[in-house]
Image (tube, rainbow, N blue to C red):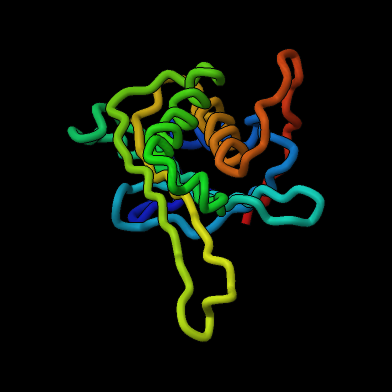
Amino acid sequence: MGVHREIDQNPPAFETAIELLRAAPLRPEIAVSVMPAPQRIAPYAIALSGEVTVRGDDLATGRFILLHDPAGHDAWAGTFRCVTFARADVEPEMAADPSLPTVGWSWLTDALDSRGARHAAASGSVTVVTTETFGEMSEDDGDAQIEVRASWTPDGDVGEHLSAWSELLCAIAGLPPLAPGVVPMVRPRSSR
């Protein structure tokens, strides 16, 4: 699952991280698969895509990328970096609320906190996009989306960070948090 440009073997720290990702509990509404990882950001990377589907409806989509540079990276303040993207449609009335970007960012930070995913150097953006239709399309309803893009340096079990990402995807999809004491299912992941 790892990618490296110069040698065929992943370093032990990255292999351990991959195993922690494989074992991470995710929300049952999410289907995750391995996708091509970026090749120029770090010597080692793994990328996952996820879809939130409920009763056949696709509610949200996203990506989780774990980067690793054994030499460390000054901007990361560490040797690993999580990079995420999450997007979902929202009601136009919700998109009109000026507090939605702040709420979107809190969905990420709350998810990290709820999973015990310690982190540093977090940064990101929340974008709300609305589309209005005109002319021949004026009878079509407009639409709106929210996008959360973020990165942070994980401290500890990277599986907790993937679990937090699954919570973020479900939050932007409009799903309620799992009830206390409910443990999300561990889903096997493709190892393409």
